[in-house]
Length: 440
Image 1 (cartoon, rainbow, N blue to C red):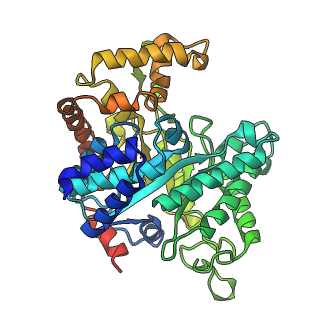
Image 2: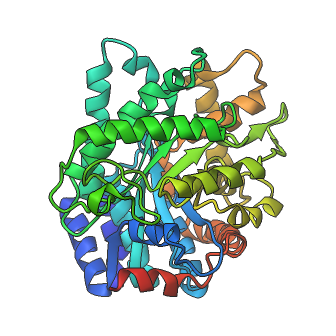
Image 3: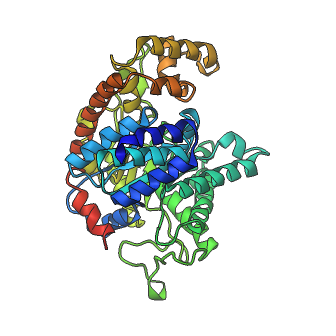
């Protein structure tokens, strides 16, 4: 049956075939692949039911999605990894030309090909509001666009959503509550909207974000102000969904490890914070990455504080390009999740097996078509490194036409990275832990 899976993938990507998508989903179900939310797993962490320390990797695949996912899944099977997530950000969906209605079935096809069985988690990463539109006459259109993205993603089987309203934080305000006001208000509104769309039997895992990644480092006070405002806003929204479970015990008492976010409306289960990392890494004039420092003490402190609000911990973004020796440290901080993207893109584009003529064509296109994004203080090398992700959609077809023998070699390089990440993040042998919480 799986011998023609590549044909179905081709039809989903290039023909936008609903028939092919439906066939992939049907085969995935028959094989025992189930799409679900990380909510149960993360609630178990809140209740101190995890055995051992691990940080869940959330993997963004921007290009060669079928083959990259196969590399991930091969290692997941080999290392008995249950705790891992496939995700894509709002911006990535756009510039890689991968709607969730394509991304999910393509990865399901990879799982079928590799003989994977069990639970898969798909996530909307950085479902971000655009500040320039929010603070203009286009505010309502921007919110509606975000709601449509959320709705379409849930319908595609994406049961984990990270709301990113951190773009609305007003650092020009001296008063902390005023800084976070738009952030926590919109996060609460979108949480309520997500709850209204949940499929029966699924509690969608919802994440929020205190500070914009690449901006100033988050503080415990930022987290406190955000959560207090968020709780108040969510409480106003009331019980909007018939099968959500209240997090407040009888008589208004707080349940152990479970926050009282409103009446029957489940709140956030995790919170993204800024600790010094930046998306894509920090690039020097030559186009090479400069070693970045992560404030692990801040990450540890905020993960601990997050638990007090009934969340599973803090989330680390912009981490894939960090030095390898850092990755062992994330589980020690209590960080619940780590988001990884650019390093995998770099492995593909910088591989000796990536055709040189295609790479040259991509770079020439960037110089001609994306020059408006070049900053005055950037060298050409810095500009190309920072913007080459924007070529992945326009050159998607050509990249997918790279000879399979080359793609196989690139996949081997990617797989080595996944071996390292799964080991260092402590998620090897988490299959039993996941099954324990989801097979009930």
